[in-house]
Length: 430
Image (tube, rainbow, N blue to C red; front, side, top):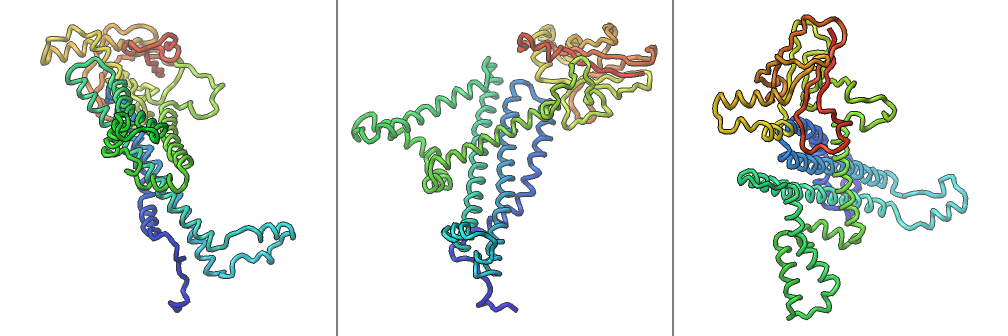
């Protein structure tokens, strides 16, 4: 058995929280690694259900939430590696207490003299590794807390503005209003702080400018915007260099937010990531798996019209056109004024007729005049949809094509038709 008096001990200057840090990182890292994928699935499931007025709230909440999860996952994973390095140094110091033996290493006299002149011992290396792990843990958790706080404040406020705008029918853009409110809230704080830094030592304590600046800073400090409200960041900036620490904090925040945003765009566009510049791509000739029920991924694919398969065996093509609030609702408000004042079954019939007029279908270039949509739902996502059964018994064998018109949009810019032709093309074979 090992003698307790001779058993290796941790250095006396070891961070007292190292055990808790290891426990939190070890337990939480696996959960945090699962959260980003879970948020992706929830985002792609909810996005087709909301209109253009609610989409900014959902997208901002998704980006901030996923950024928080990514920062925490990276923090815990890297912290485990740094703690493992620290434990390895402590163990090696116990195995080889004599330290590094430079005379036993193969090197020339010049390099040996350089290495021997370098300050620091194995105890110093252990302390640096210990401190490095604790500082990383503190920085990562603090940055994640800041992003989560911004998410709660900004998304919560945007949600409230959106609710008020809809309740009182205000013709405003909630996102622009939020940016305006944010600017108005931050302007006094920024002005007071700048005045204090540039002219604070020259202001008279009994003067109106001094009292105004003091009252402003005191108010913002009490509502949680003081420099010491986040003690971890205050300790890091005051002891590790303010510019360097703030550059690290804001750099990590921007990297996380930008990385999540780019990843979100890449998941929505299959050709964004990869060397596909010379691949022939055309919106009119593209075969998309989301247009076929036996190929699509309902958890991730966009809500596009689809048929049962690329090869139709039976007598009917089952065409499902999902209802998209971001496009269908604005178009219905603009073009379906005849439904106003109706109720019950009459209102439902008028709305169905309006949607049918907004989504005409052409088969091999010929409009289907007798097409009738039924009110249905996508059975794999439980989202409302239109259903049309198209008789194809008389079609010749070979390739055929359905074109389903999209509702007209008022936000389309000149030249955008090159990317969005205004209809969905679904090729199929008999």
